[in-house]
Amino acid sequence: MADKSLKEMQNEVDRYISQFKEGYFSPLSLLARLSEEVGELAREVNHRYGEKPKKPTEEENSIENELGDLLFILICFANSLGIDLTKAHDDVLEKFQTRDANRWTPVNNENQ
Image (cartoon, rainbow, N blue to C red):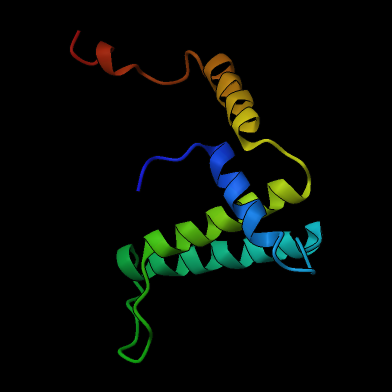
C-alpha cells in the first residue's frame, strides 16, 4: 500500500462513515471511544513491556492494531469537528520547534 497523507486518510474515513445514516458519533462519544482505545493500547504495552503478562486465555493483540484503532477514532474526531489534521500537525510541530528549540541535545552535538 502506498503512503497516504493525513488528508487522504481523513477523506478515506469520511467516505467510509458517510455510508451510514448515523454518521459520526458526538464529540463526547468520540472522546469516550478514544479513551477506551488508549486503555487498550496501555494494556497491550503493559503486557509486552510491563510486569503484567497476559493470561493464557487472553486474546493476543498487537500494539500496531491498537495504534490503528486510535488513529481511526482520532480521524473520526477531527472529521466530526471539521479539523484538518495536517494543519493541526504543522501547528503543533511549529510550537515544539519554537518552544523547545533549545530543550534537547541535537544528535550532531553528541560527538563534539
